[in-house]
Length: 345
Image (cartoon, helix red, strand yellow):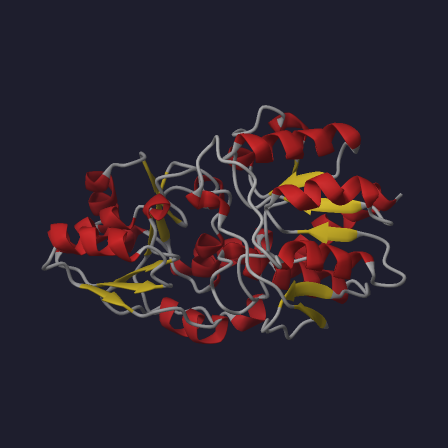
C-alpha cells in the first residue's frame, strides 16, 4: 500500500515511491506475488497496480507536532485500506503510508499489517498511533535507518531495513562534467538554501532535480542569492534522472530535518557519484566518509564547500561498489522477506 499523498510516478510521494518499487521488485524476484495499491493515475511497471480514486492526504511534514488528524472529504486513504483488505489470498499488507489511519485500522484487518515508516517523529498523534501498534504487535513496524528510529521514544523496538534499488536501471559514470547536483522536493525541511549558497559562493553550477513544493520558500531563497548558478531541471523519471545524475561531480544533501533515509544518496552511489551530506539522519549512515563522499557537520556550509574541493580524493568506482553491496533491490528483498516471514509466522 503506497503513500496517499500522490500517485506513484508523480514525484509527490518522494522517496516512498522508490521504496514501493524496490520492495515490490525485490519480493517478486524471490517468487512472491505482489499487488500494489495506490491512488488513481499511478504508474507501476513491476507489479499489478490497483488504482484507487479519492482526494489526496496532506503531506505530514507540513503539519506541526500538535496538529489534529485530518481527513479530506472522499479521501483516498480509507479507500486504499479497503482495497488492500479486499485482495483475495493475501498473507500480509505492507503499509508504506505515513498516516494515522493505517496504524489504527490494522487491528481490524483480515491479515497482518507490516508498517514501513518513511519519516521520523513529526507529530504527537502519529507517534501515539505508531507506538500503540508497536505494543500490540511487536516487530510489525520498521524504519529505514537507525537515526530515524532514534527520533521515536520506542525506537529500540523498530526494525531497521535500509532500502534498495534496481541497480540495472543505474549506469555508473566515472568521468563527470563540472557541475554538482541535488535531488528532492523544494521545501524548507530539505534545506535547499544551503545548496544555493554553495553555488553562489563557489560559482559551480548546481542542477536540481525535483518539484517545487513550496513556491514562497523557493522565491525567498532565490532573493537571497539572485546570482547563484542553480538550474531547476524539474521532476524526472528514474531512467532519465540517473542518466543526468551520473554526470555530476557530487550530489549535495543538506536537510534541516532528520532525513529518514535518503534514497537520493543510494541513487547517487549507484551512478558512481559521491555524496556530500550533513551529519543529520540516514545519509550519514549510507556514506562512508572519505571513501564514498563526505559527512559534514549539520548546517556547516563552509564544510560543504571544503568537501567540494576534495572530491578528487573519491574513487567513483567505490561508490558503485558500495551500492551493489548494501543497497541493491536483491539485498532489500531479502531483508523485507525475513521481516514479513516473522510477522506472518
